[in-house]
Image (cartoon, rainbow, N blue to C red; front, side, top):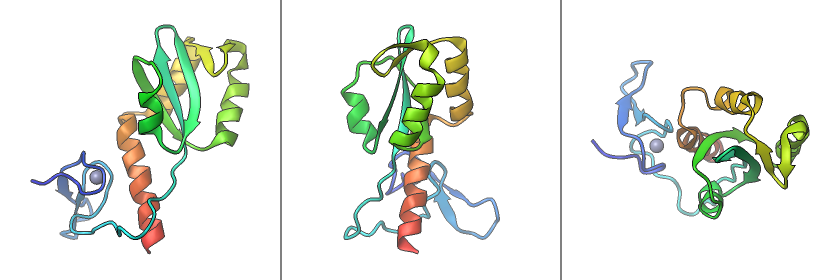
Length: 140
Ligand SMILES: [Zn+2]
């Protein structure tokens, strides 16, 4: 078993279609494919939902690992694909819960919204999948 060269998280599994192709269980990157070092990594903008105590920050970043490391939080609730446009729409949608800046009261409504976005997939796994998908689009 080797970990995925792209996301570094997944183990390889045979694909569901039974073609004999092995791919990362987390991001779907095909085992044996090497990301082209000459190509820039694709930009994947996400809106993130970060909980700290009774509040949730809704923000956006194209480099969420770096961004989240700089923000005090207890839990990453979800990622959603999107940039400032989506972020702004969410700020408007939850304006009645706004406590200041990008922080919102962690009401059931907002918690439920984030949980629905994440589904059963850990947020970092979703992110790895989006990056792999974007990379595949660039290559093909
Ligand atoms: Zn992977």
